[in-house]
Length: 139
Image (cartoon, rainbow, N blue to C red):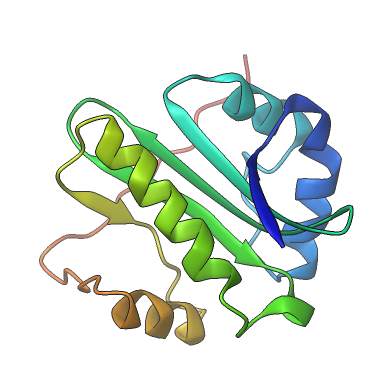
């Protein structure tokens, strides 16, 4: 397995990974959104590759205030092999290089194994904060 940055050509394969990994779909799960994220210099969109297959993804971004991590996903056949930890380490390294001091990771309550992973890697469940979301209409 090796890690590399996502390219705009990876969009469809990333969508397939997310589906296989049982990631909860959102309005931003489309090829165009993935291509935009992969092309942005302030986004670390890291993929784990085995052979010629994408077996993991993580998106890390910096808004100038905090680092944010999204869509940590590992293909079920590749879990418990260090894939997620390797991607997280790369994302944290990139965020630290941008001057990030605090990282927020979005973790769904419906995925208790994911919450266990984050706790095991030193992240705390901050119950003081709730996430509020609003979906804007397409333009």
